[in-house]
Length: 238
Image 1 (cartoon, rainbow, N blue to C red):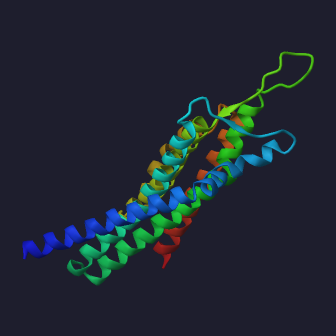
Image 2 (image 1 turned 90 degrees about the vertical axis):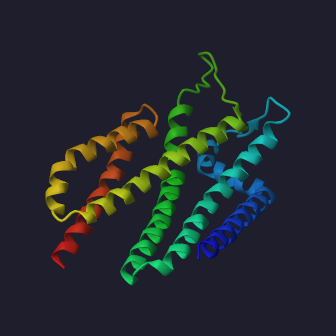
Image 3 (image 1 turned 90 degrees about the horizontal axis):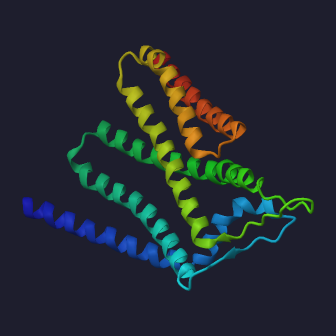
């Protein structure tokens, strides 16, 4: 019996490795398109100026493409890994437990899509807009021009990406923990101030040192949190 489980784990491990390899190769073959999609959120800020990246090392461009390919492959493999784990555990679970795990997996994927949308539509444009405000091209003062290295841009993008994704997965985890309590409304009442404090801390870490950007991001977190509370209350009423 143990040998059977070992062989199944080995087979699923091989499938995960194949998934990672195929994802890596596919991402590298489409590296220019993927890099353009990463840069696309900041392009509207450069409509009146020339926008380009520089490379100060002969390996910078290759390392950038490789890092981007690893990011795509790793992210896709994570979802495939969770799927394989779910399929491995399914025969030993009850119907209710299967539904709960599937719901968690689907919810995690949806929250990941939401985090990507927020990253590209709000956080990246706000971040670049703030830092570009220090580039003064007036003729009466010292001119400062930004020439961004391609690897530095991708490093910033990857860092912000993971922070945003983890924040939204935190929302999902909090929602699951909230549903596990019997006295949900009491728990919400006791932790509401602390949760909003955490939102402002995350907003401060994610956005530039700009009050408007921090308040806007914290406001978005608050909206999602209140929607989660409303959903919980509706479930209690049902």
